[in-house]
Image (cartoon, rainbow, N blue to C red; front, side, top):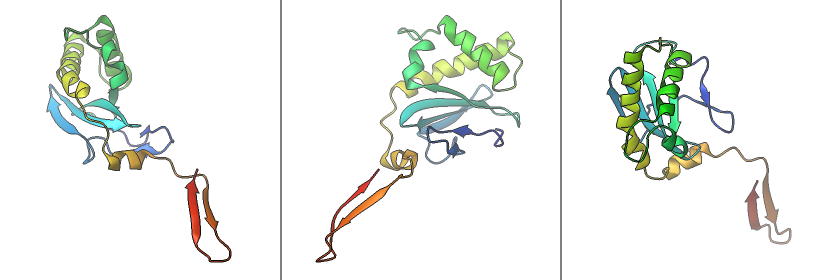
Length: 152
């Protein structure tokens, strides 16, 4: 993975933890690394090649899972198009049929795990939370006690 062009979250912060300890599940299959993680609190399947220093990461969010597999579990036409595009544009592959079929197999193999991932754990949700813009504290001047605190 090329860390000079990292994946960034919604708040613009770089996310280098791909496949790290906060991942729900990771494994290797057919020449690819697969990691199931929460990005902006949405379950995602992240796939990148085992080899290749400048390879990027192909991500599939839970909200787009139907784009890749139909209800019977078979790949859609869009799945083949997206996998070929990801191989050529993101992962540095050639996009030949054997590579595309291998990536489609990896995507379909991980679909059940993606669909059954639990909600993001509290630690992950807190890590994704943006830094506060304002922190307001209301203090009673006579007693010096804090009445309430707010974060925006």
